[in-house]
Image 1 (tube, one colour):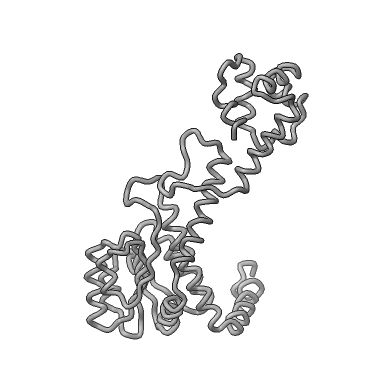
Image 2 (cartoon, rainbow, N blue to C red):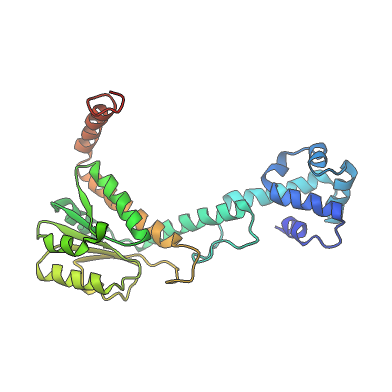
Length: 288
């Protein structure tokens, strides 16, 4: 990254050299394959000015300078690095720096979540979902987006989930659950007083409950029948976004859906083919 540091530092650069450096920084992924004549035209400079800039930064010429830039581009696109889950990018980061950091954060989050999963627990949670007549999903904010994605997938295997807090009807939905149903709570903080009351009610009525949280000390855990804890390095409020926690939730829910699908894999595949024909070419097709 030394070449990139020098381009940004611009110590002892002339105004013309600064213009060249700024162009290279803003278009860094194009530089490994650019010709010096084209770079000169794009920066309104000359062949000799670019060569002088390369030598000023310690390179023999434009070719060795491009090789250094190629190393930077490769590392930005391929090599992993530690990423702060709360502030995964900085104001001065280039576009591809941000793209790489978000990719690394996503990959690291999934690996970390995988290491926290327990096989028997996953099977137990999947069994509760599989046996339930109705699945009620309790989630708010960003987590409700993950719940809706899970709801959408479950339809594909003839399981119909209900977003319990849609239209602020969570209390009515909670009151309608029976022992044949189950309640799945998504709460990264695990600190909702209302969820605590609901879980207590469900426990009293012997209604199966599942909690997915990032809080190992959550007072909801003792009340849930099964709990999947996925700890990430996110603060409660001081962060750019809920990147890590929501990636973790999505990964766990996708895994549970896949386990459910695999339980009746052959019939689910046949059902998929049948429904696709009906929707694409049959009476339910939009083309008719």
